[in-house]
Image 1: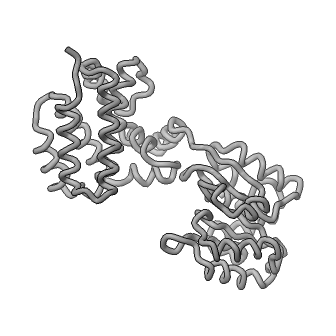
Image 2: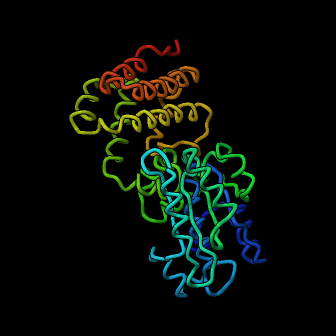
Image 3: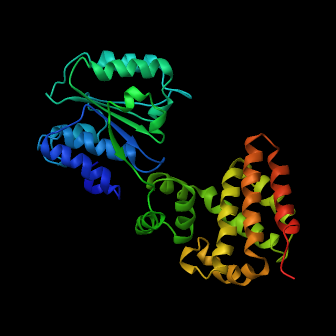
Length: 330
């Protein structure tokens, strides 16, 4: 992994590369930004450049240190992730034991804590002591989408590196260049955060099936033939797609948003662009406020799921609501 392979996050990249160029490396960094914004990829690129024997502002990818990192077996890099719902004190203690030995290469050791805001109180206090008195030269990289939830004393001891959401259109171009069908890629970049998550979602066979079901239900709910309740029963639950109801409601949210965008003649913002003919004809059958109400019903249905409402009942209530309860133009 090298900096030149990373997409966007130019501010974070420049900050880190300037530190490498000037040999001014902080003992701790806080990578703060939304999930899927490429924090782990940036952290690995930074560590590889830090360890690289060429000693430049980016990794060469060829030296022994780079090859160890690329193969995932470098002894001087350790990654900590939550065990269950939290990062526990034993994980930090294990890290301290591993760092009690000096690096074989002479470089500072490095550790990455993914979802650092999930450290419990004991782990956070143990890490604070480790940050203040590392047993050997070390660089800490804390990844978080909520840096302000870290202990104030940890916040003050790290250099903040800001991350911003990735542009969906930029990710769409990347996925299209990789051969992922445009219709699938357009949905994925609006439903997943980060290029890797989008790529993974788009590669799932059930994702394309869900998209087709949402399109069919969306058309039937607009009164264009068929029975949405029967379709839901056959195409969602009997087809084994009931485990993806949250994603179905998220996709409905995009569908209704497309209808609003069509009313405003924002063709470039349409997600289901392959359904433009239907969307353009249907958008004017209800007011913008009515379509917004449908979006709100999708969000409410998703909330009900999280409160353990029966999935089939939840979807059926939603479909009845958007098909009948929303006012139409006279």
